[in-house]
Length: 260
Image 1: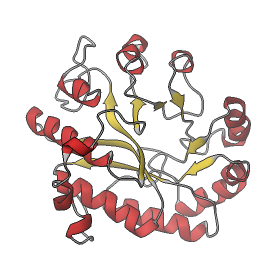
Image 2: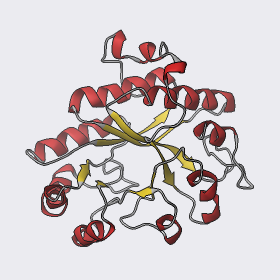
Image 3: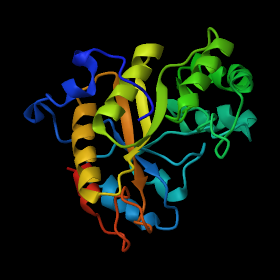
């Protein structure tokens, strides 16, 4: 949405539209849940018993009790700097294989951390986890124009730091815009990508459904996109067109597509 295409046709959203659907498996170990509805824990059963979802996160270092028994791999997140001194013991006790860095540090209404401060925290508290074999996901910036600037500043301040993959968020309209953005991140930073939040913000339900159908099919073909999670796994709210459940907690069209 905010970035011009920087890849030639072979790597652009236009090329993605040429992917042959019959070559893509319906189920994928990449597909996960951004768990955003603690008020309705029983809704999780609609997803975790299908064999289509492999992992979950909840923007926190520890899982809710019902996530512990979900059968899904839980990925801890260090949302901001609060409690970061406990991160190593928390991750170790869970035997987590990966950890997610700060949530939207470029955005004032989210973790809101300066890149230099994030790098200092990373070196002291997160880097040691990488030395013990845990895969480290960079701070997840927004797709607003300043997001990638923040990420560049972080890598400059954290020169030599271990970062195994880049989590990203994307909200906007246009399948090609989404493809161009994820390719721009991969092209610039050269690391595998996790898309930990993404959705079409169109107000047209058919457009959103088509966006999900095409994008998850395409993401399953990209070896450098290791995981992704649609936003979101929650019941429909007023004027929202991207939730995967209706107001009663049943799968809506998006939920059915995501589990197809």
